[in-house]
Length: 233
Image (tube, rainbow, N blue to C red; front, side, top):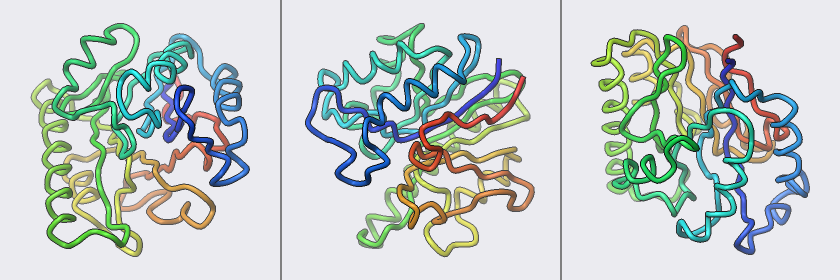
């Protein structure tokens, strides 16, 4: 019953979005994901997918991509990424009802893994093109969603937390952020995130231990498409 994570599958079975246009490492990446997932993940394991699951613009265009994920072994918990256009944040409960028993969607809620609460939100960071007002608005919204997740878990009696984001927890060059501060406030053991692609972006944010919290980057290309072990059981 181990816990794994991987992000940015960027599946596109129903739309024309070949990922190898960005980097040759993405050539036939769906086959790589399937191969390594099946090698590592057992039916009793849990995998958190940290966003950017599909290039589809709506649920219809994402159907084949989500079916691909559902066929993979293990319990799958999905976090919302910036490219997940099929997922309206206000309709997370509806997605959980529609995919009950097959997929779980993490947004304004939490999930249990052993004695940990899995909490999270999409997150946000500055990447150079936001007006200050827009950046602050999106940051505030994501921080509120993350706090809702933490507080729901705390109210249920949890004291141990694993925090998941899609975006990195800091903007480039930051030594802390409101997201890292919240992780420290609640005593999260680990912060797991993705979004960063290519060698020039893999060091955009924290990796390793910072102020007692372990930070892990799980972007698919960084992991060479092999789900990352978070907790071994």
